[in-house]
Image 1 (tube, rainbow, N blue to C red):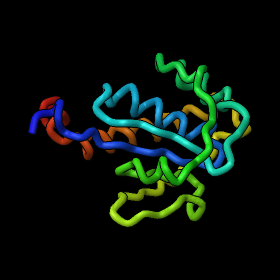
Image 2: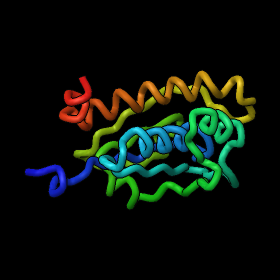
Image 3: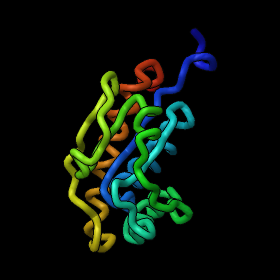
Image 4: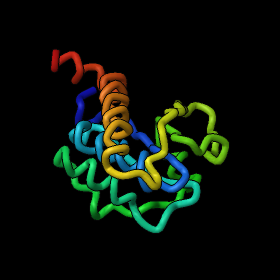
Length: 144
């Protein structure tokens, strides 16, 4: 099966407000995954806007999240995803057998300034890089 005909793995990042952690994770996966992974993010109780400190922290790395908006978590988004990564919403995420679920315990950037968001951002980047290596092992091997 060639890469073009293989189904792209899909990942859904979920946090309560879909304003910080899940948005940063989705932005990293979109950028670092180079179109090889389908990316979604959502929140069980979406905020009105993305956390400005998260937007600023990502902009420092050349990733523009300024146009992103928090989205509501739907059962459909979970069904359509191969991997569901929760970040503090736990039981509010629907469960479907056969899906891979991970819970990333990360500090919530809500109400924090950019100096406090940077370490959270950097931890998310490391986890996303490990996720890419796991989902796209052939590409990771090529990079060695």
